[in-house]
Every structure is written in structure tokens, then in C-alpha cells.
Image (cartoon, rainbow, N blue to C red; front, side):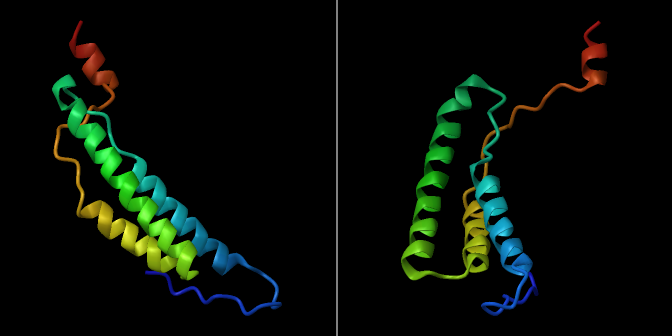
Length: 104
């Protein structure tokens, strides 16, 4: 994943550690960024997926806090969890300029 060393205490810049935190935050955002469904009939699937991912995410974050693990371990785990809990419905997509012109 990342080959950034953790800075030793008192050595100055915390940029590598901050990069690990940013990676963790990005994984959290990716997990919770569940696309809205294209069809109304898929709203239940959307809500179940969002609730499932949020519950699993709470578990990862709780473990990180309780064990004081490094953020990168959990960022990878969160991404694996997300890939194992995929979107199973057709996601809504914003119409493009071409799509809008085709309706005329």
C-alpha cells in the first residue's frame, strides 16, 4: 500500500503519519459514498447497503480505537470490506450535456 515510514517521536514533520490518516479518511468516505439508485424500487437495497457498510465501518473504527492500531491497517480492511459489500443495483447517474440535448 504505502511505503511511508512513521516519524519517530520528536523528529519533526508528521507528514507520513498524516498521509496515513488521510488514507484512512479516504477509505471511510469511499465506504459511505453509496450511490443513489436509478430506480425507486431499489431504494430499500440502497438503504440496506448503506446501513450494512456503516455498521461494519463502526466495527473497524472501534477496533482501531480499542487496539490503538496503525491507520493503514484499517484503511486496507475498510477497503476490503467495501469491495465485499458491493452495489448490486443500477446507480443513478447525472445526465450529461449530450443526454440533455438528445431529449430535444
